[in-house]
Length: 152
Image 1 (cartoon, one colour):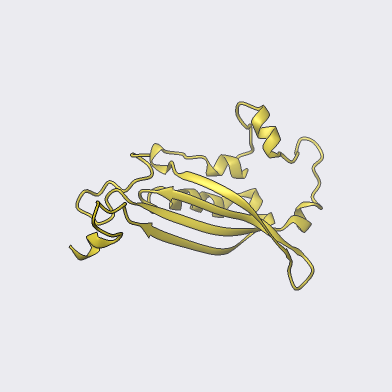
Image 2 (cartoon, one colour):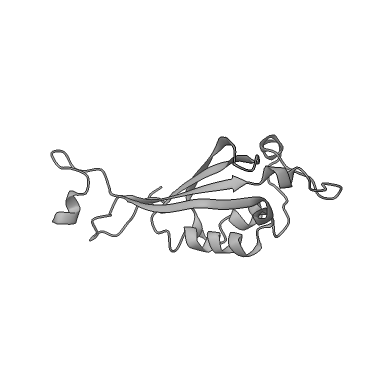
């Protein structure tokens, strides 16, 4: 956590804080359900991943591209499923809310995101509908308030 999540710029008002990236990713499940999964390709589920020590994935697979290439790319991440029902065209509006925390989005999140944008085979079945980056200042000392360091 100290090396990858918390900001370590001692002179900055963000020292001890973190940056949060949030993305809303719609999964185009109607398209996904129509793909051919004949050998050697197959769909992997969360249960499949839990049964294997490591996932042997193709070079253009999301799991391969999202994995950190360098130690500096490690982030704390989590996805949450959402289901907003049907859109005006009658298609399912469902997918993931992806969140990740890191000390420096430019050095950590951006390189991963560039790889995914360029080569991820999952791009054909996903649509990013919203993104945001938030600066989360550190917890205030006793008797102070969040963000007080901005005014010192």
